[in-house]
Image (cartoon, rainbow, N blue to C red):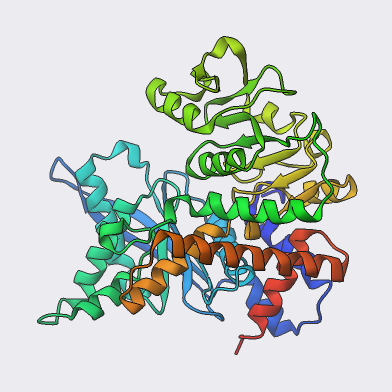
Length: 437
């Protein structure tokens, strides 16, 4: 597969770029480049017609030098091993950048969940949890939601996991159960989830961007207010748009998987993300919504494709959708001065080179979107200790973590005279290598 399309090859190229600045042994380099374990499972699921079907799933455990593996589980009919290996690797880097004591993992099941009934989805979730139950645990591997998985699915999985590991016990204490609940994060509040988790990735990204803007003398293209385009108006895209809008920036373009919308007048108009989300829920698709103030009317805006959105003349571009969106092909047409990566792996290494030469600052995914895993770590901590923190405490802890991570990455970039991604990798690699046996 071509390097531009193979996420794991891209991840290793990012690592190699950082390794040029470091003096590691061959052993240390090999430990960083290779997953520690890849678990493949084929498991039966009872369908609504009474028949059983075999589903294929796996879990990649990349590195546990700093603590238990950490990473999401995705349900997708095109789960790709290279993609999952890359995501497990990036998670190890991300946890080290955020300075949380966890490693990197990722899992998936080859399935289109939209084709399953609610009962079949529950059966699948429980069956996968049973299949990997001997390879996970609060001190071993801590999965979380990812593409097409939800807090409810985590609740089913943790319930099934606890059944598996306690089936030979008469009973367990409340403290023991709370600790076992820490095997999965991203759970509903009533099942041991953390307050603040839903908004955490977007909120963390806003803390990082605001920290960066204090360092840069970034002048708005159209005046004092900085303009923002967000590709991907899901949970992360909505919250980053909302928080930046509240911080005084103008969100001028938004898109989802079907397409997007852009204001007609970038010099003065901007979207209200809350109203756009309400309109999207009501009308079923983003293209039907154009909202300024209290107005939702497409006649006052324009439809834009995901590809076109990336190339709009805005101050800040936020890819919050899929991998490999900014490539060698379109990098020279990007007009934003700052790219804030809220998606995983949206920028190819070749595009990175172009952006660095053109003076475009890229805030890498391993820093920008680490707010989600940071609050997942807080959830894990709360479960292990049998505690429940207030949302105010969670957000305050998140702000401190994100700002500290940004300062360390920025300081490293100045020290090594490199871009922020390479600096983040240098910082993370040093922290991981310190813990290698």
